[in-house]
Length: 383
Length: 108
Image (cartoon, rainbow over the protein chains, first blue to last red):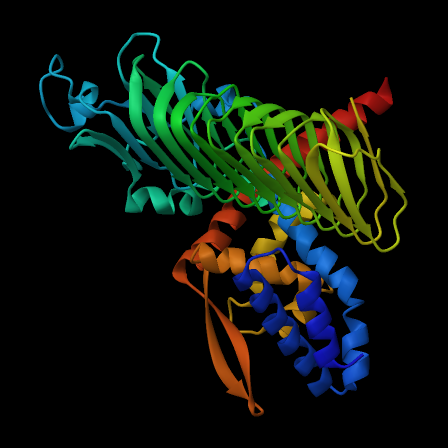
C-alpha cells in the first residue's frame, strides 16, 4: 500500500471524528511515513510498519474512548475530595456588601464557565443561593458574581493553571479519583436561562429545579439532566454520555460524538433531535411532534416512541429497533444494520434493500413507512 | 503494564523526550520505545493533549523539502516533570507499604 492509499483509507475510517482530529491524524501519519522512509525503508515497508489502516484508526478511536473513560466519573461519589480545598464562595462576601443584602437572590439567568470541573445544580436546602467551588488559601479559582440579572460563575486565570501545578501523584499515573466539583444550590423558583460550559467535567441538573431554557456543553464529561425545562433544552458532549429524563420542553436537541444518548419519559411539543457518531441512541417513552435521530456506528433503540408527525432514523452501521412506536410517517435507514420491531396502527411499507431479507405486513392503506438498508434485514410487525 | 498506569506515565515520558531539545513524532516514539511500549497512534493524542494544556508548543519547520512538526517544551511542561519527580517519592512509599504487607502475609 502506498502512503497516499494508506492516508486516504485512514481518512475514510475516521469519519465521524471532528475535521480537526481527522486532518491532524492524517498529517501526523504522513510525516511519520516520510520519516521512516528517510531512515532507509521503502514506502511500502514504512506503511506496513504502522500496521493496517484499520488498526491505526481503531487505535485513534479507542484512545478517544479511553480519554472518555478517564473522565467518566459523574457516577462516582464526590464526597471524599469534597473535603479538600473547597470553600463556599458567597457572592455577597465577594462584592463586599452587607451580609443581609444578598445580591445572589437577584438573578434569573445562570451562566457557568466551569473549566475542567464538574457542575452540579441542586435545590438549596436553606432556601438561599450557595455556590461551592474549588478554591485554595492562596488563589481564587472561580469568581462568582451577579450582573444584570445573571449569576455568573467563571474560572480565573489562576484557576486555569490550578490543575497543572497541583497534580496529585495518583493523577500522574492515570488514577483520577474524581475531579473538582462546582455545586450550585439554588432557591426554589423558575429560572430563565441556564448555560453551562465545561471542558472536562460532567454536568448534572437535579429534577427539583426548573428553567425556561438550558444549554449544556462539555467535551469530556457526561450530562445527566432531569430538571424541568419549558422551552428548549440543548445538550452536547464530545466524549461523554448523555441522559435526559422527565422533562416536557417545546424543543429538545442532544448530541454526542463518542457517547451514548438516553432519553426517557420525555414529552416534547415540537421537534426532538438525538444524534451520536459512535454511541448508541436509546429513547424510551417519548412523545413529540417530529423526531430525527441516529448513530453512525451504534444502534438506535426506540421503545414507546410516538410522534404526531414523522420519525426519521438514520444509522450507518447499527441496527434500528422499534418497540410499540408510531408516527404519521416513518423513514428508517441503515446501511449495514437490521431494522426490527413493532409499530402501532396500519402502515404501508416501502422497503428497499440490496442484500437483506424482508418481512413486513402488507397493508392496502395506512401511514407511510419507508425502510432502506444495504445489507441489513428488515423485519417489522404491527400491533 | 496496567493501561491506566501507562497512560499517565506516557505524558511525562513525552515531555522528558523533548526536554533537552525539540523533537518530532517519529523520533519521540523511537526514544521512548525502549522503556515503555508506545505506538504512533498512542503518541498523537498525547501530543494534542499536552499542547492544549500548554505544556508544549508546536512549530513546523522545513526538513528535506517537506514540513515536519517539532515539539518544544514550555516552562509549564518543565514544571510538570519536576512535580512528577517530587511526588514520585509518595508512590515509592506506597510501594514500600504494599511490599511490606506481602511479606507479612507470607509469614502467617
